[in-house]
Image 1 (spheres, helix red, strand yellow):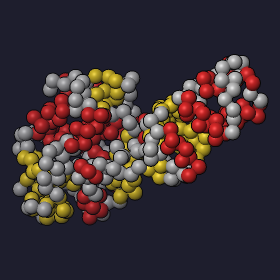
Image 2 (cartoon, rainbow, N blue to C red):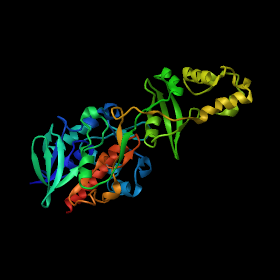
Image 3 (cartoon, one colour):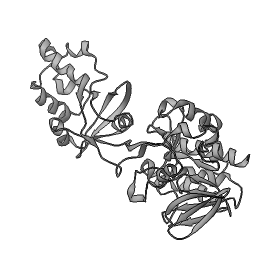
Image 4 (cartoon, rainbow, N blue to C red):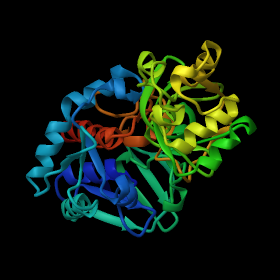
Length: 378
């Protein structure tokens, strides 16, 4: 009988296996290697965590997220990595990355996890209760386990063998699955916005409002629609319906209307973006001081440009999956199922999703740590 079977070989699974004593865990991973998503994240440099860590940067229940962040926060994570020879560097203001490559953190996990049993290239088919423990069935064998930790992630990156096995296991034990959708992903357009596609490659700073949520950052015009950090973060909160984009969040309108420069030189956007919007608004590119009040109001409409995205770029382009195992059915202080003793859920499989900036990795590591503490104390 295996003491602990961990389903998945991503960030949360690797952290848990690293923390556990030798020969306590068996990791089952569908890929030929562990940490496939870690390797490609952050442009291959892995955005590990963030200096500014708070439940406000997550979509999920604060009461569920806070205990894990309290027990194992970003400073504890950084200290844990430092002891193993890795000192992440700050980029983009407050975000911690591997100094050179995501391989640096992967090598730590591979070294730490070598003390556990590793089954690679195996697909988990299901988990059933057997006696006081569990049976974990794969496409190659059946394992007995005292306890099972589901760390199988979400549906994003199907090219990396992402699957819904974690949700199916949860459902088989009576858990509720909150509807899953692609998140931290680009958005597709309605016909009225198809002119955005002609601006592919250009980016501009924006403020996006989705319901009561406001995100800021750069918007990238793409062949399929709109992307960039601001759009990806906005996708976390968007289900359907309209979003509002302020394309001119930093314009000083008093100075604008006194200027002799043309609009395309005054607005803080690439000229081809400004000219495309002027064309759509039916405005001439002329000095700010020569704009009639009605023309100025037309231009100011770019401060609250509202439209309903047609959809998203889908799971293949999504950084993460929104939704998952309902957190009101999982203990926030142990990560154990409230429905089945000895069954745990950690990481992305849960209905907790962070913004860009290292939040999802921190959640993976923190939820793994809180699970580890309980496994060791019971």
